[in-house]
Amino acid sequence: MKSIKVNVQQLDLFAPDVPAPPTPAAPPTVPLPPVAPVAPHPPASPRPPDAPPLRQLQLGRHNLEYALRRSTRRSIGFMIDDDGLRVTAPRRISLAEIDNAIRAKQGWILSKLHERRERSAQRLQRPPVAWIDGAALPYLGGQVTLRLHQAARHRASFNRESGELHIWLTPVSTELQLKEKVRSWLQQEAKRLFAERLDLYAARLDVTFHSFALSSAGTRWGSCTVQRKIRLNWRLIHFALPLIDYVVAHELSHLLEMNHSARFWATVESIYPDYDGAKQALRKRSQELPVLFG
Image (tube, rainbow, N blue to C red; front, side):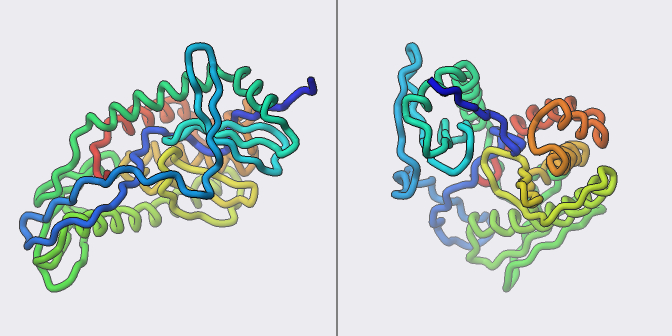
């Protein structure tokens, strides 16, 4: 049998603990205060018709289901997210060869799937934020206090001295509209701050990137492409600045090393020495975040 090159490394910084974006439902409309609660999420929708086909493989006592996508890449790649295992393989490789590659990596795959299930269970146990006046929202490793007001139109204002986020809503606004206003403000803060940190660490590493955008990914904190495009998850704005800087340093280092080799981590260390401590802290803090948007 011909040898198969299997690539389980990703150029993305995985973060399975990132809360998945909510599936919005139409909330009732009632006057403020209090803000109207959002109706329960509907059942998950069926898989879209263009989704990759699902296959099954027996691994000992485990019946593994995975999504297979064909591509022009030269090696087999594995990705584990909220939907389970996704495999991307060259068109020239047979199904039997793909299954054998999965068997060769089954220890890693089953371990990651188990970790994913445990994190999902922990996330469901976290108490959700009560969207009321005086609610505490995580911001840059601390908290901001939510202050609600009635007005003829929606707007937001942040008092940095008092740490209060003031949101004005119409009398018939809903909780969903409040959440969207808060999310929009957090994303604006994230875009401003992340751009500053990217410029700072890019200068330290003496690299340039093509573009930067926010991401809402449910499974990773950041990514960097071969086109030098960087994406950072806006939810990083919940964490302290040193943890944000670690993700920034991580993604910028991919501009020099598009892998997770020893040389890559040496590059990260050159501009962020305590990267291992930050990586562990980011994992821990993400497990402690309250449920905000879903």
